Image 1 (cartoon, rainbow, N blue to C red):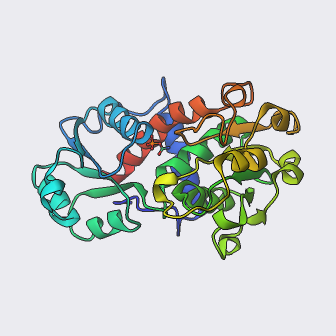
Image 2: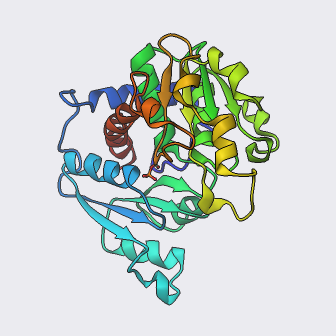
Image 3: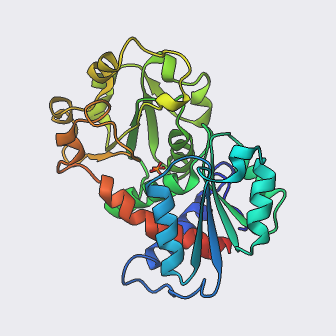
Length: 296
Ligand code: CP
C-alpha cells in the first residue's frame, strides 16, 4: 500500500491486517518506534482540524519522523496558487508522505497522481475519511473482539459526512450490520447501495444498536436549509440522556468530533459511561502509526 485514499475497494483481510498492525502500535506494543527516523511527514490541511492533524503529528513523531505542518491559512493559496502547485512544491522540500485534507472530494486522489511520495487522505469533501473509519473499527474491535453480527447505528447528517461513508464501507466489510438514521433531506439517495439499512426515525431503531455513532451537522457544507431548525433536529435525532436510557445494556456511544454539544449529543451522554469518544481519539494514534508504517 503506497497511498491511503479511501476504504472503498478494501477487502476484509486487508482491513484486519491494518488493525492487527495497529495493535502493535498501542502504548507498550511491539512495534518499532524508529521506523520513520530521519524522515519528514507533511500535514497538508486545506480545512481545519484538531483530532486528525494532531493525531497524525503524534503518530509520525512517535515513529521518529519530523513533521511539517502546512495549513491553508497564511499560505500562498490566498495569492491563487493551485492545489497541485501547492502539493508539488511541498513535496519538493522532501517529505516521504503528504497527509492531505481538502474541502473537495477527490483532491487527495488528484494529488496522488502527481507526486512520488505517499498520499494519505485525511478527509476529502463529503467523500471519505479512511483513517477515521479505521480507528472507529479498531475501537469497536478492541471492545467486542469482532464486529460480526453487531449493529452500528449512524445518526445525523449522513449526506455531508465522509466519516459515515468510510465507516459504512469499513464496518460492513468487517461483518457488522450498519443502519443510518437522519432526516430524509440528510440521507443521500442510493445510500443503501453501500449495504446499509436506512431509518428515518431514531426511537424505534435505537434499542437495536450495539453502538450509536452521532454525527455533527456540517453547516459549513450546507448552502441551503435541510431541516426547519437545529432545535427541531435535536428534538428528533439528538441523543439525550432520556434516549440513551433506551439503549441496550453495554451499548456504546461514539462521535468522530468535533461535537455540537446539546445538538446531536447531550453533554451528559458525551461524557457518560457509554461514551468511547476519547478512546476513539487515543486509538487514532496507534491506527495512524500503522498507516504511516505501511504507506512509507
Ligand atoms: N474526526 C475529525 O476528523 O476531527 P477533526 O476535524 O478535528 O480532525
